[in-house]
Amino acid sequence: MSVFELQGRTAIVTGAAGGIGVEIAKEYARSGASVVLASRNQSNLNEVQQELTDMGAQAMAIATNVCDQQEVQSLIDATVNRFGGIDILVNNAGGALYFKPPEELSLEEWHEVIDLNLSAPFLCAKLAGEVMREQGAGKIINISSVAGIKGAGGISHYGAAKGGLISLSKSLASAWAKYNIHVNCIAPGLTKTPGIINKGMLPSEVDRDGNPLPSLTKPCDPVHVAYLAVYLASAASDHLTGEIIPMRAMVGFDR
Image 1: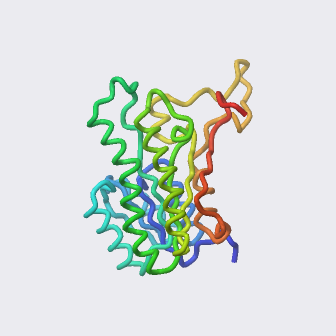
Image 2: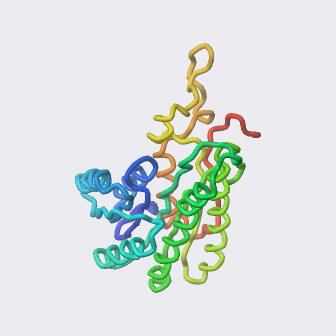
Image 3: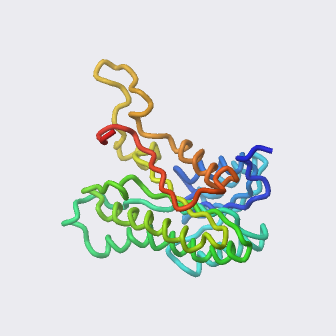
């Protein structure tokens, strides 16, 4: 058996109705995990669930507002009732929601983004962590952003939340190491998700002469984030915790 296989493991993936979350769910299914899909969009979740079951995986789709404690608790309880435990939690749900400079951001908008990108991962980790502590093991993977490392003027609220998620990941890793719970964080840069593509935010992938640019200068594909999430969920990362792994196109950054 490959060290990267997840056979017999149960994973919850939030934000699993599109983008990075879908690709993580698919790669977990391919690696043998049972996958619980969580998002507010039940219709899209059902489509992803069907795709996973067509692959031969065990999958369950539960519409969940990850900012609501009662709904998250219901997600945790349903997962344990169906699969007997929780081995992996991926806190992927998130988003900038508003693209505006900080002076134009209302306090309500600020709180909405902080709740989604920081408070919700804490809530999910807290409740899933109760199950993992009883089991004596678990893997938590938080999806942050390069904006949480470097900041971003037009999405200061998002950068602040994702920076907080990075700090939270390190703190949880320290607090829960004695329970054999690993907590790590992936910080993607600009990624080819439908939301980014639809907003026309992707830079050109060719130079002025029309030649393809090197892969390391391009935004990453969501599946590459998923590959890393498989590694962090697998036995291959059993001695890794409290780490932040950036993934970014090397354009406009110091090398």
